[in-house]
Length: 390
Image (tube, rainbow, N blue to C red):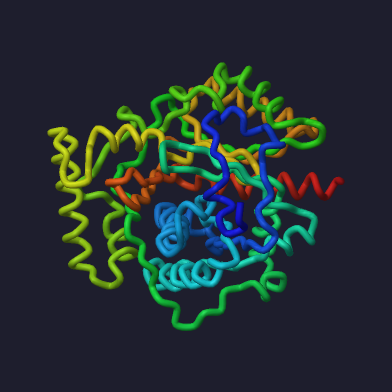
């Protein structure tokens, strides 16, 4: 396969429980780049109740780059308060421009500072890390990248170090607002059916492997989150509530309408009306087939992924949560894993629908009130403690 088409030509897999088969992860070409973006002081924004804005900016990073580049060639990982994308050398300049536009848009619309950088994969390898990946098929035409090698973690540390990131930082004056067509947030928060929405980050440590860690964790929970599709599905009919006037509509319009606010509101309301009619009647409206879309939506979520660590959004009972917390803490103390965890009563879903007629859409799921942003901060504290004692 050619370097440019590495990801598009990579074979996909459909059994999520095989993510621990490390030999199946392939190294990305040496001349690729990581486009990294992260909201500065996102914890303060979360504490102020602005996590939906944080989520939307993180999703906007992915939407901007994929709208500019070929979606089938670009692996990405949504992180709640930011995102990472890995792009070919031939696409890096266009990707930088799209990302710089989101930096400016975040400042103008939300007054949040989005730091961003384009970091060569070759540099990450010089620093002892790697970017290796597999392509998980959610549904025909929709994929998630599973990435290992600690390269994303090193890229994140570079991004957050002002001196280390200086040579990779985006310096594009008068960046053009990128097209964010397809980005929306019209679903109400997904209420927990079991009592607790858990955003969980796990990484094996010491001699433990991911399959062994998950085998032990599954025994504590009573189900395997890597294999039990029904138990882990977040976007099913029981969870989903569509809002004609969602709370996040104004934010969506301001981000996606390129300054044409009235036109943007009108377009969003017409789309919402057609969506509601389609769902209530089952009628196909233009390219929108309600039955097909809802079936695909339940599959096309990123509630299970690998971005150097395993990241899960789970709906747990109180007993399951206690069992998970006890297992994680005891395993951490034993040097078998590092983890971060955040608990809330509901999840948020941000959607990116590129082509509804061709079933190209992805839905980013995270716990409310902090989700992966809080879990990641907790994870990094434990990771630093481990490294400090090493």
